[in-house]
Structure formats: C-alpha cells, structure tokens
Image (cartoon, rainbow, N blue to C red; front, side, top):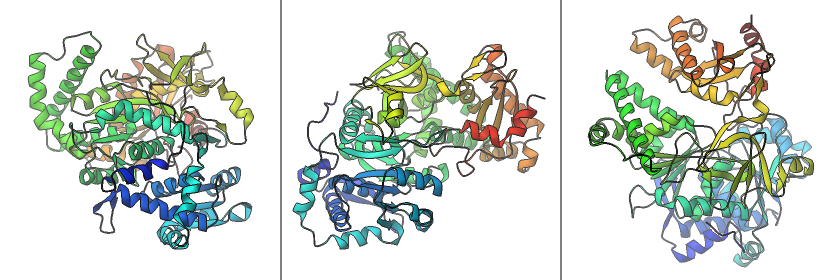
Length: 599
C-alpha cells in the first residue's frame, strides 16, 4: 500500500526525477511530421520550469485557478505540471463543452486564465467573456501559447518558481474537476495533491509489474482518454510518477487511435470498454471478409474457455487448462490472437478498463488472447479507481476489490460507499451537496452494487436510474443495456419503462459493422431511413434482446424495441463527455418513439 504523502506536491517528482536521471525517456511526443520523438526527464523538467516562469510573468499566483480546454495532448500535461509547480489549481474543461457550460464552470471556479487548444475554443470562451469578471488571460495552443509564455518568463529567476513549488503541501488543492453530470448542473470536485499522489502511487505500487510487456523492458502507455476526465488525469500523473513513458493521442475514435497504437507500441493501456469492443469487432470483421468467421468464432470460444480455466485455478477451484485446451490455444495464438495483439501495437499484454461495465465474455476473450484486462471502478469524487481487479486473481465481470488503503461498504439500500485517502474534499462552494454524499469520510457513490464472498464488487446500476413499471416492478437498466450492446451490430441501447406497463428499449446500430454485415450478404449499404425498417437487421437486434432477457425475470425483460436511424451523440446533448447516456434528454428527444413502443 502506498503511504499517504507527508510533504510536497505533484510537481516535485518532475524535478526529482530529472536530477536523478536526466537522460531517461519520460514522454513520447509527435513532431510536425507525425513521427514520435523522445522527451527526456531533463527536457520535460526544463519545459515545465520555463512555462511556470511564464505563468508567473502573466500574473498567475499561488491558489489561482486556471482552466484547460483541449483534447488529450502533450501540452496539457506540460500545463498541469507547470501550474502545480507554481501552486495554481487546474480546472479541466471538456473540449466539446457548450458556451453555457464553459460559462458556468469558469464563473463557478472564478478562473483567472484559460488555456484553449484552437480558435473554435477561443471563440466559445470569447462569447461569454463579458460575464467572467475574474478572467484576465486567454492562451491558445495552436497560436503559439507555450512559446509566448516561455518568452514572457525568460527574465524570472529559477528561485522564484522553486519558492512557489516548496510552498505546495499535500493538502493544497491540485484541481477542480467538474462532473460531466447526466442530470443537473456540473459540480466542481475539489481534489488535493495528496489524493492524487495516494491514488497514482497506489496504482503504480500494486500494478507496476503488469505495466511491462516482458520483464526488464521499458514500460510505455499511450494516453487517449480525455484529460478533462479524472481517469485520464490519474493515468497522466501515475505515468510521470511511475516512470512510465507517456504518449498522448487526441482522439478516442478507433480510426484515429489504432494507427498510433501501432507506431507508439505501448506495453500497457488504460481504456474504456468501447475501445476493446472496437478491437474485437474489427478483428471479427476482418475474419469474415477473409471467409474465416467459423475459425474466428472457434478461436474466441477457445480463448474464453482457456481464460476461464485459468480464472478457476487462480481461485483454487480447478487444475487450469487441460492439455487438449492448451494445444488448441497454442494453435489459435499464431493465427488469431497475435493479430488482435498486433492491432494494439504488438507489445500490450495487460490493460485496465473503467468508465463503464465490460462484458465478462469480452474480458475473458482478451485474457485468452494474451491481453489481460483488469476492470476497475471509481468516480471523479474518488480520484478515479476505488476498486480494481488484482493481476494475480482477476474475476472477470466484476470491478475487483478495493484498492490498497481504500474500503467499500454496501448500504442497506444496496448503494456502494467508498472510504480512503483518495476520496475528494467536497464540491466547490457547495456544502449542501457535499453533505449529501460525504459522511464521516465515507462517499455515497449513487451506484448500486454487491460484494461477493471474496470482496469483489459488481456494479448493478445507479440509484437514480432505477425504473419502476406501472405494475410496481423495479428494474435496473444498466445490465440489460450492456448485454444488448454485446451484439456486434448494436452501438447503443437505452431501456425505458418508468410508469409504463412493461420494459422496452431504443437501439442504435454501429454503422461500420452494419455496412460490413450487409456486404457479407452481398447487399448494398442502406441509408438511415431504410435501416430502421430492414427486417434482417431487426431480426439480428431481436437476437441481442432475447439473449439479454435470459439473464432477468419476465417482469424485467425487454418486451419490445425500436431501431433508431441515428446514434446518440454528445453534440446532440444525448451523451455526457465520458459517453454515458443522458436518459432524460434521450427520452425527451425521442418521446414520440417511446410512446409508440406502448401503443
């Protein structure tokens, strides 16, 4: 277990490591030609120091809040550590935020300066700047902001920066992260340097052996999660503190991400289930296109059985894979599993998944294919992971055990409560909301769950999302939705039925998978209007629904569904920036379609 830090702040490690080993490669950064270039710990320290001087020259003071509005890129990490060096607090803002959302966060946090990525962001901030009396500075990365700040700070002595840095203590506030919020206005979660240091050091201490592809090699991870989200920030900090080479990729889309996985070649990745689904579905589509869907499905089955046998052995419930199963596994490793690993760069042997639930069978497949995915669970309020699966005893389909130093309790109503040094300080300027979720250091998460006899947590839903049918049956939609989404043609699923006679669902499809599926049948692509009426597609989605229903009682099962022409998107206000469904917004936007399900 990592000890709670007694002195210092997050930026200290940048200076300590540079002094200890200035030539060690700390980060990978793409140059103008798209090639990865190494950044040593000494170079990164110098860049942080130069930017910190520039921040001081531009009037940023100890305790000031500075907003960062950008996609995931090297400069965000540079700004984070420079701000922490001078004792300032960073306020991450999703790059897709609307002007009203930006206004609310910047006003609520009394932000004094904003770093934006490009002109569109600058215009978003500019449109509300007259209502932000505290805002004094706006820097734009793509307009040379870093060079401008470095030049401004050139005359400032190093000692000035070091005085600021040494004034930072573990209980100093590091960041205010606004919850993406499926309901209501975002609330600012106040997270200290201590919480982030405990969280990241605990993850490194417990999981460091799996950061490597093989013993003795350099650990490297490609960060593609949004840095505006607590999970991405934890990865950033843990990589710097754990001496893991860190690269940045600004787009979470599979098309942009896959080529960078191949060129950066990480040894370990941290992702959301969507990424693993994309890798799996892409491999399956390639096999189908080559006329090898039968062998691929057999390979999947063998991988799942192999991983299940290892799982049983880890818990003392079995001897491990049989000789026959090991031989089949060895055969498919060369012809199928290696291709799956190659799609992730070839060196990834372990990964961590969070943000939402991962299908147990998908987790078993990846483990059997040579990439163990450790699922975890946490919130912004718990500084990312509160639980995670231990490497040596992973229980697929669960989110693992409490991380060392943290505790989990299930309340009488099934709500998950979390305790530990990673729990946040409270909501900025909102003591009432803080009291509602924090009691004697215990965080009431709003999630429902269960602990098994070995202390492994399974999340079953959210308190606020429980549907109650007109017949009085309580239904948690998350599990049903996850199982419907397991079908390769399904992109999203939302279960409805509150105050209705039965449960129903709205489903969107994965366009890429549907186009491939149609081509395999010798059919031409369909437009959105034709998709929703296609009887063969409806039959496929019905299969997904029937499979999902097998896990619940008849009263909880999906009786009917409707395929929608277009996916739910963040731009339409139907998803949060972390890709969670905004249920009320979706039900309002599709009120006609929902009503039609009951007539």
